[in-house]
Amino acid sequence: MTFPPCYQPDDDEPDDPSRRTFMIGSAVATAGLLIAPTLTAQPQKAAVDPHAIPVSLNVNGKLHTLKLDPRTTLLDALREHLDLTGAKKGCDQGACGACTVLADGRRINSCITLAAMQQGRKIVTIEGLAANGRLNAVQAAFIRNDGFQCGYCTSGQICSAVALIRERHANSDDEIREWMSGNICRCGCYVGIVAAIREAKNATV
Image (cartoon, rainbow, N blue to C red; front, side, top):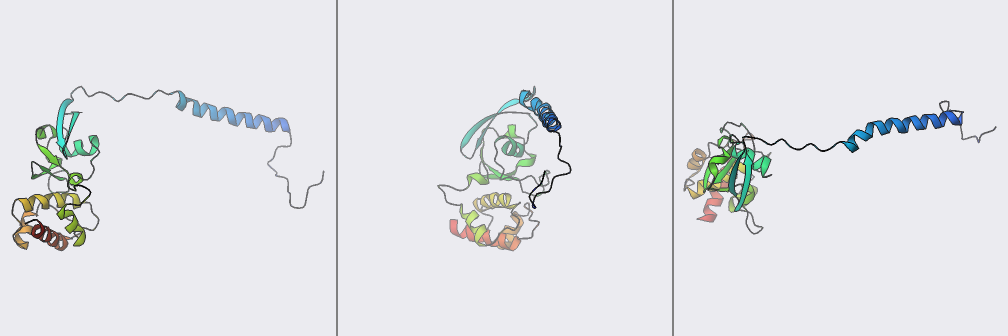
């Protein structure tokens, strides 16, 4: 048998059609053995925590009823159960301020606050600051003054700044620095942060 000039027989190609059929059949059977368990496996039900307690949280104006381990922090409840990931887990020791949220208008470190202790309080996270499609004055000022770089600490910085202005602790740059000292920016954007708070304070007075 002759072949066109552009065609070269494959040395690995089986000459015997029955061998080819056997190889294809073996491949199909092997694939079936691998796929079948995934098709027939029943989804496992999540284990029910026998120690879970009902916890009602008012977050960003909406009431949520959860079943939580009593040891669950407010930060974990927000991130893992309510999918509100704006508050960040930084040091997990209440030292960096990345997890700062507002509770009845006061700033708290949500990483060291138990969710069960916040029942009956109005929690506001970074996701709840904007209203009617418009940024909060502090959020807008942070953008205009480059008050962030990587952005990891920014949600905590902004929540803390909102409370600081309401507390009337933004009367000078030195006062702003002192009362924002619990919020660390590892990128070193403090000049922009102070300028943003000063601008937002003047806009809200």
